[in-house]
Image 1 (spheres, rainbow, N blue to C red):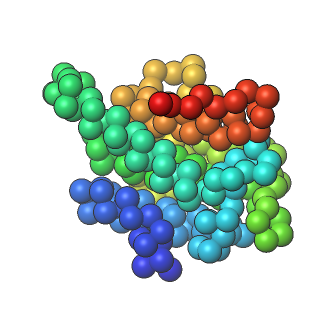
Image 2 (cartoon, rainbow, N blue to C red; image 1 turned 135 degrees about the vertical axis):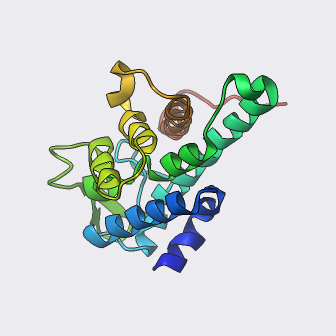
Image 3 (cartoon, rainbow, N blue to C red; image 1 turned 45 degrees about the horizontal axis):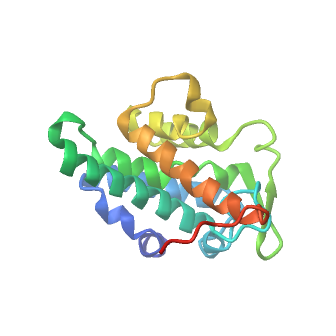
Length: 190
């Protein structure tokens, strides 16, 4: 299962700290083992229940958010240098785990669907994700990122890494949500 996970999430290799990388893998393995989701489901599971049908899978979303935030961090480094430092290991680890709680918040429904689980009726995925990350001793900076990536983080100061993931997450969500709003055409470039 580990090899399949590393193949599914090649961004794991971007975490330079081997110990942190192993913790992230352990969280993913536990989330899969404790949920009703299989490794194969991650490429079919919708990343949100708020867009139906959802054309983007859970794993695509997790990877896209992580890589978008990483691209922003690289721009920060290029333009701002050390004046706006980004901890890339925290950013990538948090990006790969930001929605890990959805494996408990959602449950499989048929071949391609999902619905809110009984656990999800009580707690949203940021809370569930932080609890899982804490069990595996992930650094507080990564737990903070998981906790604050959604609306739950709007009332606390976010770290730079959490800010990048938060905006990358909502950028992707709003772009996919826009697909449903057929009355508002997409702008075409060129």
